[in-house]
Amino acid sequence: MLHLSNLLVGGTGLVYAWMVFLVEPADPYAVVNHPLQPQVQHLHILVAPLLVFTAGLIWRRHVWAQWRRGIAERRRSGLSLISLLVPMIVSGSLIQTAVDDSWRRIWVWVHLVTSGLWLLGYLAHQAPVLWERLAPRVATSGPPPTSDSPPGAASRRHLPETSAPKASVATTPGGAGLRGDR
Image (cartoon, rainbow, N blue to C red; front, side, top):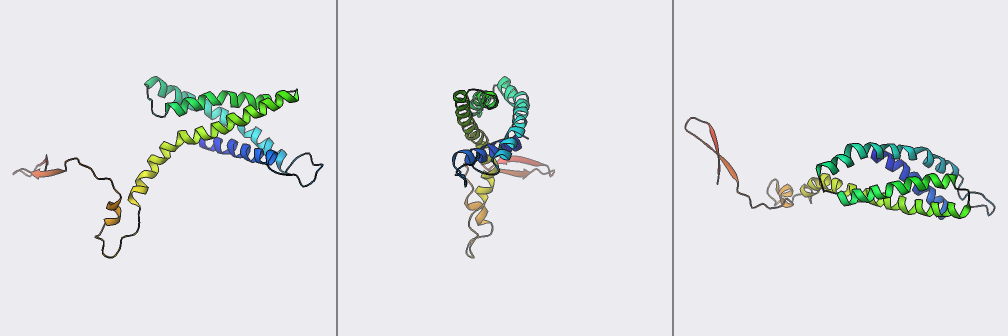
């Protein structure tokens, strides 16, 4: 659910930012730069609470549990995400409620910066997990074997060499197997 909420909120936010800052309106007197700009903004505002809700779930089940167990793996990127979450949420709310135009512009830039860093931090936090899942596939893939390659050479070619002793199974006169090193 966290991946989906990040995709929805981040995707609508990026599309909305593209429409506001990079699209030139066809009509010089247009109020919006793109005809779908109001709908994308409304969709972004409607799906943002899903991200807040899932962040709360993750806080309880993942963040606080990892902190209490003393697990330091990916802690730096996780703490970065936590430090970006509050200003991202608060600035998103303050954009909608700010009356003064100068404060509204400040909250827009705070929201843009923290949201952009949130998306980059989220990807950085997820990258090691994705890499761990993809590494076995990458390690066994490679060019197809040639006709002069022995069978199974393509899968062995990219596997890392180990210097660990190989175990063999020896049988006793009674037929039971004993494990020993060669």
